[in-house]
Image (cartoon, rainbow, N blue to C red):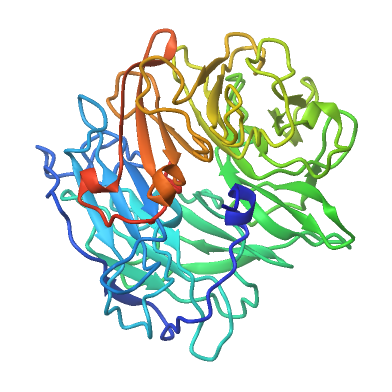
Length: 496
């Protein structure tokens, strides 16, 4: 099974033709009608992941290989709704890509890929956006997105399909991010493309698939990035989202680079490369931004889930986390960037090749101390001789940044966690953190799409004043939700 770095560099299927322009397609059914909030207006909090406006974050779970009717790989999305008791399999929606969709063939649509949530049209409800594997009728490959719209009753059954951006010649193999990069208060969609950087669809985006304008981002010079991952967050502390992009340069296929483009109303600044304390370029397989030390500047966290070679330096052995602390000009001048792996003091375990630490990351405050923490997946971790059983580590943020002190570990071998660690489980291949019960602490959701012969499974944990706890953790698969079963890779993608 390919790891996250390969999933992020998706190859677009060629068996789907998409009509030009935006079209609205039905995407299945809601198995349980979500309970509408008492108030008719959406929550004033405008949470970026609250699909039904009740003030509680929700999480969407992608199963991109789900079979719908006779269409293999059509894809499905299950939505778990937050509430006073947190996430529950009883409060859900299930959406599937239609067998008769108006696209030539729904097979390999891979609905449920690269899921992100934000209020894209400014109505106060979070919307769900993800990639489709598709090509245009004339065979040109490009970025094709599907948007389900939030409302008091949850996500729309119909998805608006956004056509490829005019002039986009990329293969749409990069990542997807949402956030306000132009300071107008409306979320924008940034999409990475191969060989050129990417583009931004500026909001608001209408239900008919119209965006206000489109702009592109590139990295000047010889190392124009083959973009593989992007993230949006306020690194400079000016109140506007900045764009971090990660990818391979053509001059050295083994060396990745990360650049920061600061956002503003007048467009992006010139890109600045993010480097480690030794001045070397930085790459990885996952990326996020959060203010880990609460100094008013977002910090860039990169998970490097793959070693480039057995000769890789020891600090990256078995994968690692890289943290670049933010500042007014991008990287902090007062706090050095750091690498953290399982050989870092305080981090449980021992760094071994193929652990894949950093294959997935999620950022959130798990203990209510006001500082975001990092949940990091190690799906290749060997547990008591069991290959690829997998685990999740949690590293604490604080006034001095992130270190190994007080780190925690969880897996199917942990007392209180449902399941049994087995070879090839790859527990932790997907992670998410959200305060789904509004108790001031983020709870983790862990995906394991290879569990039970790629049928997939999901774990929901609880938290207390000490952070994440195993007690009360629950696990279930697609069948519990009434979602398509079989080798659907349920939980391969999660919104965070």
